[in-house]
Length: 111
Image (tube, rainbow, N blue to C red; front, side):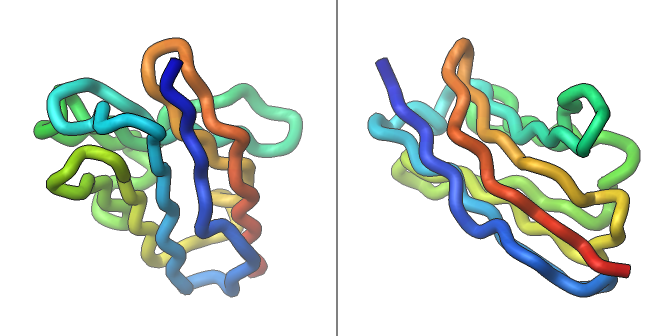
């Protein structure tokens, strides 16, 4: 079974940027669908951005124009570039591929 590892979270001031990475143990992102989710304290996990079949991109309304999802050509890694961060973006961010989830990476935005 493929394994996913996220990295890149941290503490940032409002208006700042972070780039999250999701690296898979196999080259699965070139033609398959994956998603970045986040879970804020006390809230349900929500879809932030998705890469459809390795190409098309879908974003939650709350992050459109600020976040960008992209993958490496070899299909091992997907990035989530997050700009203009605000405190509402705080949460644990998870990488998802099918039934597989990464361990999550914490993003904290101080306003």
